[in-house]
Amino acid sequence: MADRLALSAWLFVCAAVAAVVLWSPAAGAQVAPAAEVPFDPAPSIAWDAERGVVVIAAVDSDTGDLLIRTVVPSGADETQRFDHVDLSGGPSLVLDASGGPVVAYEDAVDGAVKLLRCGADCGAAEPVTVGAAGERPVVRLDSAGVPVVAYRESSYGDLLATRCLAIDCGELADPVTMITGSGSNLEPPFDVVLDEQDRPIAVVSISGASLLSFYRNVTLASCDDVECSATTRIVAWSSLDNTNWYSAGQPALDAGWGANGDLVVAMQFEERLGAAVLRCDLADETCGLGGFEGVLGRGGVSLGIDAADRPIVAMHDVVRGDLVVARCVNPTCNGLAHIVTPARAGDVGVSPALVVVDGGAVVIAHGDASHRELVVLECEAAGCAHEPTHPAIGYIDAVVTEPGSVSVSGWAGDVDSPVDLGAHVYVDGTYATGVLATGERPDVRAAIPEVGDTVGFSVEIALEDGPHEVCVFAIDAVDLPTALGCPQIVVSGHLPLGYLDSAGEVDGGVRVTGWAGDADRGGPTPVELYVDGQLTTVVDADVPRGDVQAVFPQLGARTGFDVVLDVTESGSYEV
Image (tube, rainbow, N blue to C red; front, side):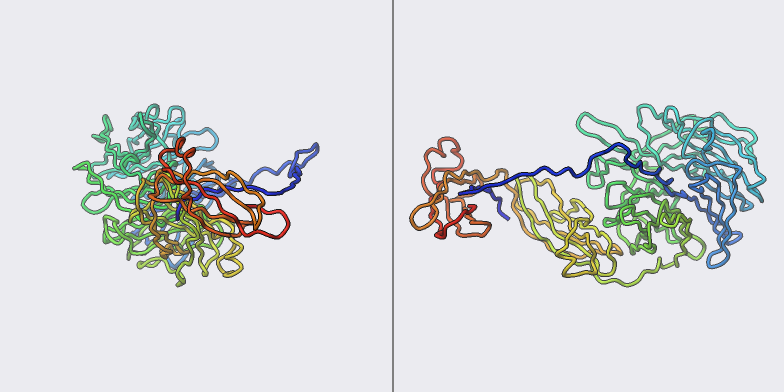
């Protein structure tokens, strides 16, 4: 659509302005009640193949109690509560050789990092302090079943690792620093795994600023030996190299081991409508990026790997309040088998934790914030079931170019579910941005009630001058795309210029004079004239205007217009 310059004048107008006080604080005004504690069970999950059960550790958001839940797939489900520990945030869980839970957590009372080795009864176990002050601990067991705990030190933000000297953790080695917090801007959340030689490997997000821009790196810090006397760092992903995946918020991270010793990392960005999977060859110190657009999750991520070495990722869509599950079609995740939203009722999917059990089925523990419950979802090997849906629908209302940018607006809706859908924009075949269709569109609701009230979207994209193809896709409730169109545009570097010199009554109507020019146009600039909002005529500004050319030589010599509009009835008009 061509650039427009609006020129208007009132022939006769009288207006009154009134000020309205919408809200003002007053003495004795009621104070809002204290906010309810946000519900986040922050579960950690493990599969006990020997007993055929799933074990889940979680925190009661209201009391800080530790919850241990044992689930037999398609069978019994038992939850135990332990109030002799006070958790701040979610626990980290592994199972020992006997299937007993080993839990690392941050103590809500003294801020220490503690380890609880349950054995047969978590209630009889006494916690061991492994760090004086820390947060977000991660526990792993080495090949001998000895715990290794990594955590972020509270004062300086260092990532520390502490190794127990025995299975019962009666003695501890001195903590070692895997990454120094000061100067590295180490960001939670992170993950830590042990390789085949029991050497810790940390997967962290590190932010910083270069001379030209802000950056964020996903970094692997590999200990060179079991004691972690030194570390080797690999930048697995950088926002400087992947501007398409850049996010202003740190990514959620989860890591696991794939076939052939590859380290697999799932990343979910806070402010990005998408997710990514990294597959790293630590021997070559190289990582490959696979990913999937159109996933509206951004509130936590959990990774599983099936028997065919294909990543499975669970995410929380914090905007729509859904649980999102994505299965990669191959080990490198350069395509998707499918994406589903198996849980939608209420605000669900909070802090999902996923595990792949024998037979390829997936079990996901997640929070239901609407009912403040920890929910366990079992998915069949082929995926999580969902009802068939109609394709998303929508329309591109306008594509307007400005110097260096294009604005796209329209609507997108789903007749199967009145949720806010995603609208993804591609420019010249490359993903440019994604937004949620959250704008109110009563006109669409009146015509198609099933789509709900909020279906409108509008987005501006920076573009270089020249011709472009802009394609828009609506992403439906099960994250499948519907093409809304691919208009062709031309972005130019200049706005048209102009001025309305006069508008006055003459015999036969209203005479309007002025000038208009466009440096990017090879000939006269069209001028549309409206009377009271209605298009009356279109003329070319081709009258010689030497005065305009003297000031704006780039517009040429012929920029003037002089036209009489057919307005004969008495009254006031806006031209």
